Image (cartoon, rainbow, N blue to C red; front, top):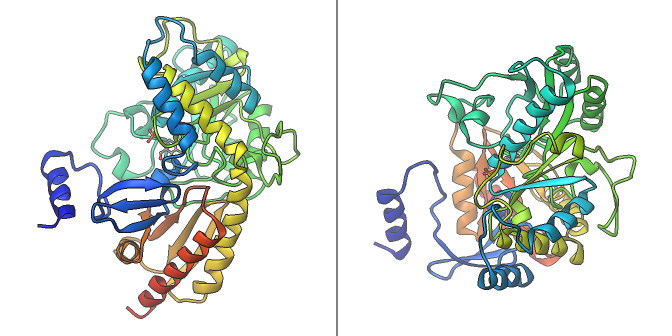
Length: 423
Ligand SMILES: Cc1ncc(COP(=O)(O)O)c(C=O)c1O
C-alpha cells in the first residue's frame, strides 16, 4: 500500500463518510501551491472553498497566530480580552457598520444573522410573535445546521434530516418579480441571499439583481442579508461581491460608489480566517445588532484573542498586497485564457464567474462522472479542483496567484480538457 493509500484507508476506516474527497493526501502548502505526501506539487484551485484567499502559510497571518497563541489563546466572553476590541474597530470601519458579532464557522454566522433578523422583526418591525418569515433562494448554500438545511432546495442537504424549521420561503434565484410577490407578506423580516451562488456552481445573477433586490427590501421594510462567506474578502475582485463592478485601485474605498449595494446584515467567514483559524462575523448597525442583549447569543470560542488577531492580519494582508486588484486581473486572465484554449471544445458548455471565483460547465448529463474524471486527470497534471453541483468544476485559486503561475496552470488545463474531448 502506498503512503497516500495508507492515509486514505485510515480516514475511510475511522472517519465519518460525510465527504467524498479527491484521492490526494496533502501535507504542505505555500502560497498557491500544495504538496502531497510524496512531494508532488499542485496548484490549489479550490483554496479550501475560498478560505485561503491570502495563500497558504502567509507569514504575517501565521505570525499573528503563533504570537497570540503564545500570549493568550482563549478567555471566553466571560471576560474582556485585549484583541477583540481592536479587531471589532478595524472590521466595522473597514466595512462601514456600527457593530460586529464574531463567531467561528460560516454556518454559525448565518444562524446568528437569522436570529438577529427575527429579533429585529419582533422588537422593531412589530411582526407578531413567532410569525417572522425569511425569504431565501433556490439552490442556496448557507451551511449545514438543522435550521439552515431546512430551507435548502438540495435533497442531499436536507433529505432525511427532518423535521424542519419553519419560517422560510424559497423563491427562485435572480427572480425580482418572485421576490416582489413574496415581500407582499407583512410578516417577512428578511431576504437572505448569496450575491454569487458558489456551491450551486458559481451562478452570477443579472447585473441589476442585487441592487434591485435590496431596493425592494428597503421599500418593504425588510432586511437585506448578504451571505458573503464565499464571495467576500476579495474573492470576486472587490472587498465584497456586493461592491458590484467597482474598479477601485486602492482597496481602501469607503464603498460609496454607485455600484455598491449595502446589506443591512453582512455575513463573512472563510477568508476572514486567513485560511488558518476559523473566524466568522456578522455586521449590522445598532438598530439591528442591539436587539440581542447580554446572555441571548454567543459561542465559547467566538471572538477569542487568536481569532481576533488572525482576522485583523487577514484583512490587512488583503489591502497591503492589493489582492482585490490581483483577483480582478488574474480572473480576467483565467476566463480569457481558458476560453481561448478550450472554449471551442464540444465538451465545454460555458466558462463563467467573477474575479477568481470561476467555473467551467461540462457539456454532459448532470449526473455523469465526467467532471469528477476531469478533476482526477487535472490532479495528475498538478491542478487541484473539485466538481460542484451538476457537471460543473469550480476554479478558485488563492488570490496571490501570479500571472506566470496562472499561465502555467492554464496550459495544464488545456492539456487535460483537450484530451477529454476525444473520450
Ligand atoms: C455562501 C456560504 N455560506 C455559508 C457557508 C458555510 O460555511 P461553513 O462551512 O464555514 O459553515 C458556505 C460554505 O461553503 C458558503 O459558501
